[in-house]
Length: 110
Length: 114
Image (cartoon, rainbow over all chains, first blue to last red; front, side, top):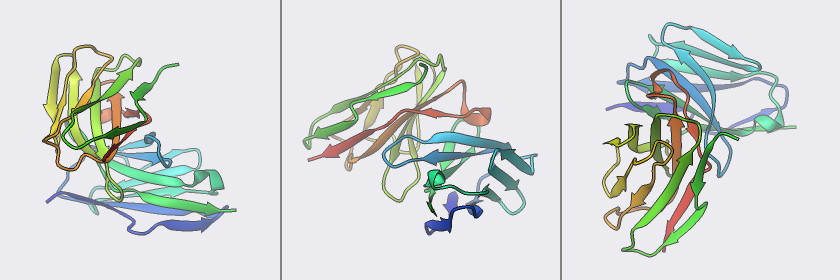
């Protein structure tokens, strides 16, 4: 069966450190992978999209990697800030829909 | 301001009642989606629509119905046939199908069945 797994536990890190989140998938062949941020009680907000032929993508303090051999994406938040505290969702895109992981909750301590 | 609006923010329903959740977008997007989110689970696709007057079932369509009579509107009806309707419902839109396009989400409607 198809499965998308993100870090099973919440991530607590000190301000200024790098947070690394994982997204592993099985029985998918996504052409694209997207990352979203969701704050409590609100809708997700798009952060980054990476294509299957791209190894790495950056946007400000965010970096995403996509390894189709390992079937894994890593999401990094560098120089983390308390405002980065949220739940981060990975989503795999096929022809007509996005399939979402359950998300990883990140808390950045000041 | 362009965006997606959902109403109401909170909705309470008695068992056996149908209820309709509103979703409106002014982004001129062709594709619209409804998701359900339960604690500890990822978003699950209920229905999606690529274009006006056309919609398709997602992964968990049973007990739900939709219509797409206007480009900007995609209402979701939760029927009494839905066995466990208490959840957070999210509407989204994108320029076209999600293959290369980000989705824009509304603020959500939290439905509670009493």
